[in-house]
Image (cartoon, rainbow, N blue to C red; front, side, top):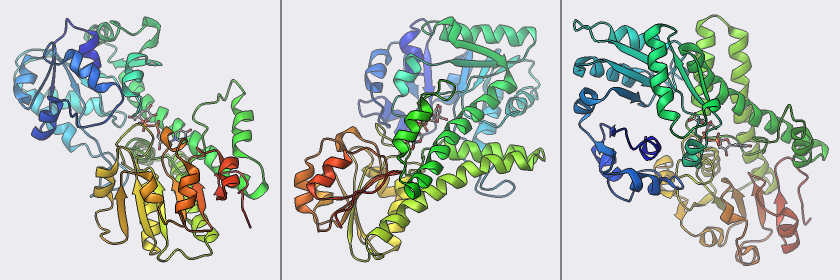
Length: 439
Ligand code: UGA
C-alpha cells in the first residue's frame, strides 16, 4: 500500500489494522518490519496520501476500493487441521465490510487464499438487505521478503482476476488503472478470478519445488563427489530451466511456501485428487529431509556427540535481508541441537528478537548475540543458516583462532569461500559438495 501511495498521489490510501501497537509503529520511523528501502517509501507518502489508523469502520465507509490482506494461516484445529487455510479473519472482514458499507465497493483479495474463496466473499457480501453492489477481485501478491520494495516497483507481473461480467470487467479496469501508474501495461495480466487465485498457490508451489528438486540432488552429490554448484550451473544454463532459485540450502523457510503448498494439497484432497496431493506433499517432505539431514551430518561429523559442545549458528532469519523467522530452517536446526544437549549461540543482524520468541521453550544452553565473533568464541562448530552477505567478509582467521579445535564449519547456504576456510584450518562441510577435511 505504501508503494501504491507513493506511485499514485491522486489516490488516498488508508492502512487499517486491529493492532494498535503495529499501527503506532507505522507512524514512527521504527517500522514493525525490516525491509530494505521501505522506510524511505513510507516517509515519502506518509501524511500526504498514506495514512495509518485503527479505525477500520471509517476506512471501509470512505473507501471505494478495499484491499483485504488479513492473515490466512494454516488451520490448527478441526477439519483440515495442519493443511487447510484458516479463513476466520477473512470471513470476519467480509462481514465487517458488509456492515459498514453505504456505497458500492471493489473488494480485492490480497491475502493468499484457496481457489474459490472469492465466491464465499461474494456470497457474504450479497446477503445484506441494502442493495449495494460489491465486486470481488483477486490480485495476489508476488513480492518476496527482503526485496519487497524492489519487487513492487518493478514486478515481473501484476495479476488481476475478475468476474467476466460487465461489472467485473469494469472493476478489473479500475484496478488495472492503479497499477498502470507505474507498471508497464504488458506486465499487467488479467484473468478470471479462479485463475488468479490458483496462480498464486501454483507459483509458490513451483518455486518451492525447484528448491526441493535441487536440494534432493545435493544429497545425491554428497554421495557421488559431484558438485551441486556445477550441476546447478550446467542445468540452469538451459534456457527452458533457467538459473534462478537453484541454490541448494538447508531448506526453504518463510511464511508462504509451506503454508501455500499445504493449502494446495488440501484443496486437491478435497476434490479427491489424491495423487496430485501426494505429488505436492513430497515437495514438503523433501524440505524436511534436507533439514534433518543437515543436523544428522553435523552430529556424525563431530564424532557422534555434541553434548555440551558450543555450536554457533550464524543467521536465524528464513532468508537474508529480513527480520522474519517464520518457518526458518534455523528454528528446526537450533531445536534439534538443543535436544542433543549442545550449547547453541545464535547470531543474526536483524532477527534476534524473533529468535528469542521462537525458542522461548529453551531457557538453558542458549545464547543470542549481536556479534558473530562472540557467538563463535569457544565454539566447536559454526553453521551458516542464513545467506547474509556480511558473513562472507568476516575475519575468518580471527574466528578460527577463537574456536575449539578441530573447528568445523557447516555451510547451510553454500555462502562462504570453502577453499579459503580450509586453508585457514577449518573442516568445511558445504552442501552438495565434497567436504574439505583436515584429517
Ligand atoms: C515467496 C515467493 O518467492 C514470492 O514470490 C511470494 O510472493 C511470497 O513467497 C509470498 O507468497 O508472499 P518469500 O517467502 O518472501 O517469497 O521468500 P523467497 O525468496 O521465495 O525464499 C523462500 C525460502 O527459500 C527462503 O528460506 C530462501 O532462503 C529459500 N531459497 C530460495 C533457497 O533455499 N534456495 C533458492 O535458490 C532460493
